[in-house]
Amino acid sequence: MHRRRFAATLSLLALPVWTLTARAQGLAGISDLDATKGLRAALEKGALSAVQLLGRTDGFLGNPQVHIPLPGALQEAAKLLGALGMRKQLDDLEVSMNRAAEQAVPMAKNLLVDAVRNISVSDAKKILTGGDTSVTEFFAGKTRQPLTGEFLPVVHRTTSRIGLVGQYDRVAGKAQSMGLYKPEDPSVDHYVTRKALDGLYFMIGEEEKKIRRDPVGTGSALLSRVFGALK
Picture 1 (cartoon, one colour):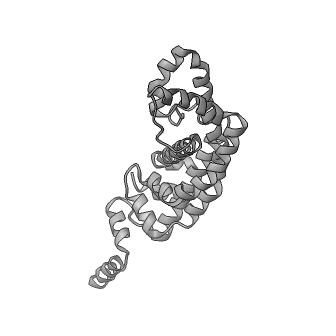
Picture 2 (cartoon, rainbow, N blue to C red; picture 1 turned 90 degrees about the vertical axis):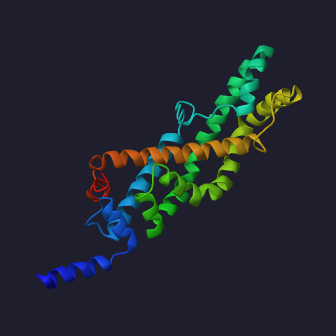
Picture 3 (cartoon, rainbow, N blue to C red; picture 1 turned 180 degrees about the horizontal axis):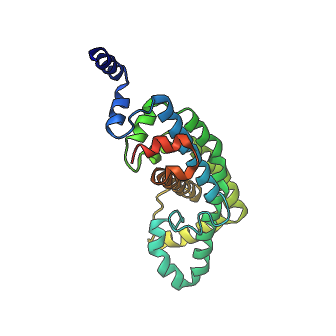
């Protein structure tokens, strides 16, 4: 009896600190390997779902959670500009920005999947035991900079093709000449890229929340074990 207790104590001492922490939070009996594999599967599923949802017509424009509005200061000037006969230009500008984001998002797929497949035990710990923003913080930290570089040319090609840059310059120029608008981003392409990435990370987080709420619904035994243990 004493020998069995001693062996059990040794096995607990041999576990990594984050596994002990996770045990205290409900992951008892799940190995580091399974916990990390389960998280990778969840994040990859969430990332691919988010890309599919956003990278299509109305993925941004028709989704109020990620819809890209006019830049903040330009929104404030919109009423006056609308009164000056620029309402249609403002509406076209907003639609075009969302279309550009929808065109860019599919480019994120490979980088997101690579980030997930290279996830470390340390990253897994932070996400599994973190709060509601832990997934967003992980993806933003790993992919925002390289994705900005990939999105900008795609956004620029789209904005150029649909005349967005010219639209933006005309509207923003008019607002600036009246002292109504000071741009936050260096260009409309940078603004659309920033908002597109914000929306992408947000939707990945939303997809992962669904898995946390209903792990059985994923149809994966591993996800059910890992995320079911967190309930």
